Length: 152
Image (cartoon, rainbow, N blue to C red):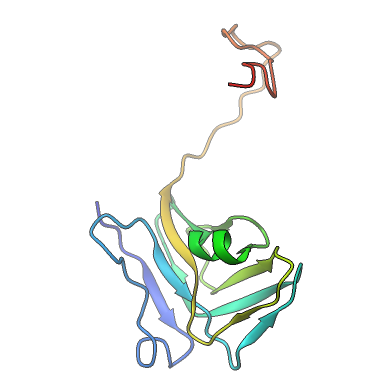
């Protein structure tokens, strides 16, 4: 099912010198976000920087949220992940998308202008009405927490 996603171009190189985000295949879940930097960024080990994407979005549907996720290849090969692990974009946010890039490796990493650094996905959102109770109905698991089902 397709949803509308309004985007505002904040960096004129996006859509001219570098392509707008697009789905790579019919089955792709994410849109690649690019580093719209003025100059390449040398990300030192354990350093974290906010990187502009050159665009703002407005989802406008209260039942949809955006999530910024790391690109698996950058994370696995080079240790470049998101400083906040996952970025959450509310449906009413209209500002520029910034990507918190964290170099968790022990080697500097150079982010080039226009490089694909993260991906944006849209996900359904359910808002809950909180109901205060004295007790919960019993369940099979109950309050058993971390590791309750064993190592396997």
